[in-house]
Length: 289
Image (cartoon, rainbow, N blue to C red; front, side, top):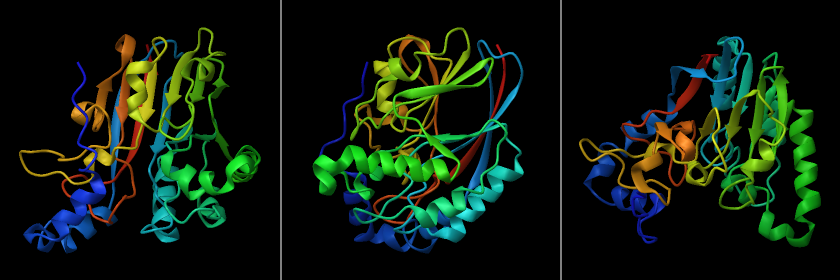
């Protein structure tokens, strides 16, 4: 049963501003909140994946939000940590940019181009990417503009999956869907070529999970930041999901019993603070099912 969605008047941005105006600003949302947002941890998880024939190491990075509070040095540290783990595959969960409409992704792509994995680097766009790349401003020219941006990502070694997928190994299919809020996600299309292979599906927003057209081996999501601000005993007052706390972070379950992992992400949105919600780089060890 779905948890009621939060009031439209209580967004993460409004909550953060409200807290800044109160006494909590001197604590969690002062220097400590800034410091918590600036450092990140590596979360290591393992799981069996049906159809997989050999172990697989996956690095999952999401919600970079480059451009507003995050700059090249921080992205460089994330890339270095991912490369140091020597993953077989690197997946990027969207919200690459968080800046003015029509932003140039080149400075970010310069850093992301250093990512290295023998099976490749794949990603999807999130809602902030659509805004940062100027979807509304471009108007009718958006399809061509989006194609040019996808080509720019490809030149940096990142294959953007938009309702499509690819066999990255004889036993593994990686699919990715368009953003749930700003795009037109189609999970069936993203998985249509999987056959009997193990399946990994990228969806920026976990709100896709109840709408899956069938079982998936594993879905990886971001978007929520784990709430970004979590309070002792109460958890996250605001989670940007129509399902409230249901898909806030960590291991969750979608339709058809599909396992999914929701990362807390690496950047911040609204204001550059976190509390009890450390940014994470996720390293998954997937084992034959």
